[in-house]
Image 1 (cartoon, rainbow, N blue to C red):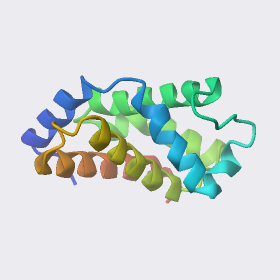
Image 2: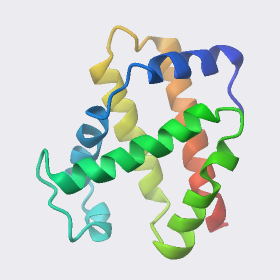
Image 3: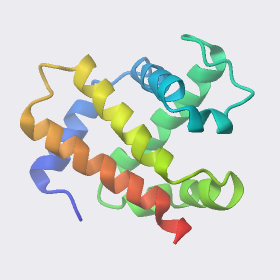
Length: 139
């Protein structure tokens, strides 16, 4: 699966508008609604605005940003992160799909004017590629 030129353009143009504020908002419902993810962050203060959530959100934002910057080589950009999650952190791969869903909802809710049907399809495809790359080392 690869992105079309149009999809890459949509992702890159919308990415330039996304702020670090969106990621902690995306992680909050994930942590609250998906109790299995709490097992990876038992030491985190998961309350809105917590410093730990902001730091982790910044890391997630940076990783997604790396994927956007390397949109033609997402696998290369996220290879080390995939290894870290698979071999060291041993994160359940289902969590990447849950995170993708939360990011998709966050982008849609924060940028409704930009979130057209084409943008929705492009972001869904992009985040699916990111999830697939992050789970590749599990196979």
